[in-house]
Image 1 (cartoon, rainbow, N blue to C red):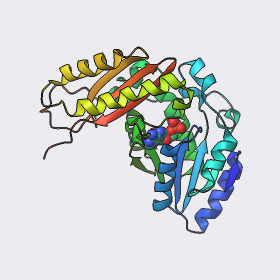
Image 2: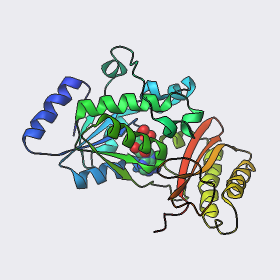
Image 3: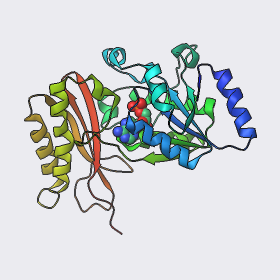
Length: 284
Ligand code: AMP
């Protein structure tokens, strides 16, 4: 496995590989890798001829400076974790390589970016679109793999690819969880032991809520989830919404003919965690 830091180098390598007839699979990450990331890499390995993983903590998508500073970084550990996987090439640029000058591009994703993460993290998805569009330009993948863990991000990326006519197929990959149900996240390693222990209440409450859709209205169930989680002294819910999986707008009734996803953001001490689960698939 090769680790490359410069755009020119990765371009040269990938041009040669393309000439050999290999299709390129791409997994963009911010490092601090875990088995959620590795599941994307393995899927990419099954579907494409050469897997590229980028490791880049993108400053433009952090609306909170403290969050950017404390974000875990350990390139050698990431490389060690990727070595036995399907990944053949790691692209790990420095910020100056991606942003030799400030990126002033403004994307507009309409109502998709005005809810949930977009509401609470202003500028976040613009930063995501800046970095992912730049990385797509550099890597020019045939397929790119994104986790459903970041459900709204996946919708934004699909919209960006559609709007800008970027010739890449976006593959949506399932959430990988810890044994106790907590969604895997690079931020989990920042939790103190007691916060880590209590963080499980987030996924446990969502699993419980899925079985309550019969007895509650959508609004009642949202309230129930928030109250239940906030009863825990280590947790503070920022939002929980049950939304249409395509438009991301809140659903008003279980009868609405759409697939529904419950999306949540919770502060666990200083660390902000997100998760989501399906709350009913569309009936024919
Ligand atoms: P990140 O490094 O957090 O930017 O994540 C890189 C990619 O890995 C994104 O597409 C995430 O959605 C995905 N990812 C992160 N955690 C998980 C998880 N627990 N299960 C599946 N995919 C994940």
